Image 1: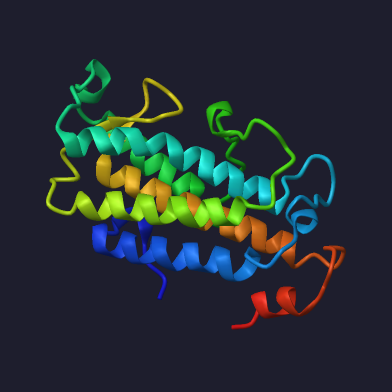
Image 2 (image 1 turned 135 degrees about the horizontal axis):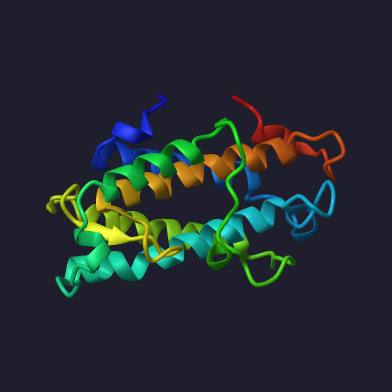
Length: 201
């Protein structure tokens, strides 16, 4: 069942994160290292690079969430400015939605250090997903709309912790959509049973 990320609460986001994470594994878990690194052209990302990018981006949220849970965070000046967090959160969620018009350029801090992705990328993705979902679950008793954090990508961009979770989930959706289109290309190497099953509904 599709959810509206912009208004989703924590239980809905947790369910969607688990669903999309499982779909990544179902579609790409059986791919070889060569398939994961295949690019239709030098300008486009491979499936493996997309997954590594998701890992890199999500890793940057783990420490801030842990600081919130530990009660050791101190709000910055920009986090105390009213209205800005709601504005930035909404803009990013809309921009990352699968099928949204325009192109969102990934911040450099979220880019993997190498284009050649090792074959264990899906295993690392799965491990991180479980860690991240666990952290999100631990935040269930918090007032997620009143806790403001700073984007790991830009010191002046702030949003609520709830919007941070929405951004994490919509970012997952965005790259599942992107990588699934790569997998469906006729020239994608190895159109065997694993690939065919990955598109079964």
